Image 1 (tube, rainbow, N blue to C red):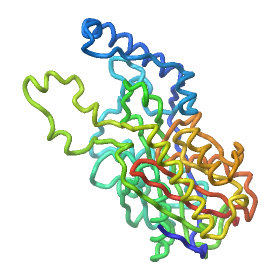
Image 2 (image 1 turned 30 degrees about the vertical axis):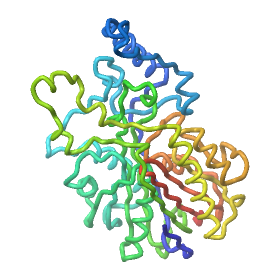
Image 3 (image 1 turned 120 degrees about the vertical axis):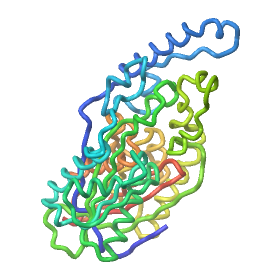
Image 4 (image 1 turned 60 degrees about the vertical axis):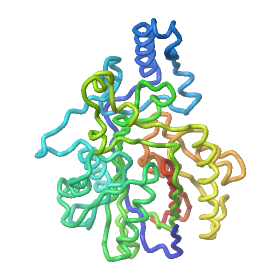
Length: 386
């Protein structure tokens, strides 16, 4: 947990890469229900014998009521909607080619660099902060650094959906240690870790990449600038949101008859959550985090112009804002982007900040907050100064 009274670091730009394909709730549910019909038909004997339970169909209305999500952007639409596959088709690339995760991060980074009128020589380091890193090493951040032509350093970090807030705090520390500017990127290919055959979660995630540029506050501003008034971080271990996929999974593979009996041996390694428990435990944790942070920095909740919250679930955001404000927040106070983007993990709060800050006046204050698996949560209080 960290708090900083002096505004010696600021945000000078953000960037966004949105994939070209979108899947509506109707499209997603149609594919899911086709899969349910086929599964129930193929397993009718076992279902009639009571050996297995039939799968239940879903509806677009159920998805929107459960989450607030209406659509999501994805890197690959055809593979997700193919009921024989139900997963994005993202072919492996040769080592000499830019990885797909680095590619979308580079697109977001270039957008941020254009917005701040900065070139590679203006940036000292790259942090890739994301839930879903494509590989262990070489670091994705170093690949991004190379693709952008930045002569400095890069490293990866993962604190699940709070990664952007933790990345901002880490960049702030690097600047205090002597760096001039830090580029922090959040590339999230969330659809690749999602089980699209699971009725309770197949609709949750989308793909996207965001970028944030941080710099010393004593640099002469060249455009928009947001002083960072404080950061606060918190983690608490929980299994209620989990993804067990990793480099050791291949060591678990069975052989012979055991292997043949498993059509998809890694399905149980994909995203799982205990949604009700997450809601019950995370909402008060994040509400208390933001309220306590504002109090420490000396800012009344009523004086906060905007809350750019992690876009996980509409009800969660509404309850968190209500806990902090003591009343329901307006759409202007706590803008929503998950209806179009779905849950994009670490990138969600940055998308909200990127898209919903143009009307903020000089001197007005906002809070960027990410939260999710771990449990992890991070709050960043900012004030517009240019």
